[in-house]
Length: 146
Length: 146
DNA sequence: CTACAAGTTCAAGCGAACTTGAAGTCAAGT
DNA sequence: ACTTGACTTCAAGTTCGCTTGAACTTGTAG
Image: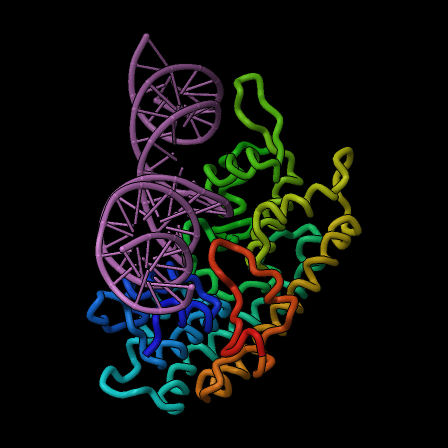
């Protein structure tokens, strides 16, 4: 079992962030008699997953949903982790596809005069439907009706 | 010249966001006698650039730096826009490379037991040096010293 | 026993990127 | 003239992912 400081040093994640993750249910700990947290070694792998998943673009809520799929009773196996990767993997592919569209369309679309992601086919419908986050994440083009 | 409502409709960006962008210096407008904003048509292209660049992962500050490189005196040409794309394009390549590393390393690194981005070579030094944002964005591995 | 580092909770703060609301002005149609 | 909708400013609020500070307890080394 590891103290919060151990986990922080080994993962590079601040103790405050680890407490925050625990509060959000992404990791769990037992308590020593003193009230101090004791993390199982498996927590390190969970934290690694969180860091990876964030880089891929998942929110903590989404990561929580994924982590909830791990067996609560026993230590997760390689197979268990692999199952989590399904969503993840396709998410990466989508992101890469989008980035390639953006790269290709940079000069073609912005440099030209059309200004329309619709016409330039740089943005797929799904991306635009999934307008999430605080601000608008889509571009409706020159003529929303036509 | 376009009203803020025109730009909002044509870009899909809320008027409040456009005012915010203007406040941040990303776009500029003149004023009609009434005090109402009048945007030049070129503002649409700037807004398109902002939307694209955000998807690539640039912050508004970074986007501002890029947009500041456009000629202030005349309407930007296709060539002008292309120049902006240099940083952008390499940024996309870096992101794609990172996503591919993440995808490859998902089962290999998380699924196995090492938990170390160092050893698994999933993360390059530059990514880790560029730990930005509020929280920690790097992973120091099992043994920072060794 | 005394330090002092490391742990605890809880509430508040921060930066990014906007949105919302209040209170008021302007422009267009009937 | 009146109404309606689009516009204005300014301050404050929202979400996300944490961090920071206060006040306090625990664990360890000398």
